[in-house]
Image (cartoon, rainbow, N blue to C red; front, top):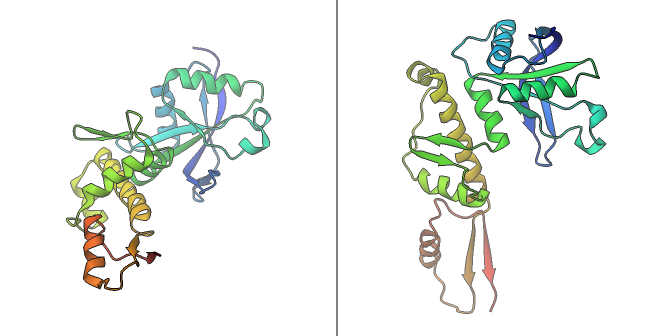
Length: 230
């Protein structure tokens, strides 16, 4: 193993605006922390070092990421998406690109809810049972249509505390992730629901409008009406 290098570890979560501006929100309760890692550190070894430094339990989900040095980025890229650390090869690349800056910084996001949000923002594929979502080149709209069609009227409310007692951390990640996908589907298909009604007849009735909505599978009245003029 090669000589170790000082690596700064920041704990918190990522957020992203509609304009694709990424920001890391550091946990205000966390102090500045560091680990010593070699340039060829194995990924699992690096993750264990981070867990130990941040006191993250072995069963708690955690994702690691980093950003390229500012000197290597265009001004418009300084708020671009971070790079995931998924393998030992990724660790080696991270250590090498930061070698001449003498500053390596890792962002650690832990906990089921935070990890689910991180994966959601990255639009990473996820698998529930035998079904994998966001894979095979499916479009975003087709994916959300699939989620929306699954929602139906059989949603349940449950205490988050109770769920943590019933489910493992990995299962909670999937639960939170699917919940985020459902909310995104609602925003696409419900908040901009529009009823199109032809006004070239003078006998249009409200029950006819309601049937039109039902035929399109809408689950609530539209937010506004779009009347098509003759």
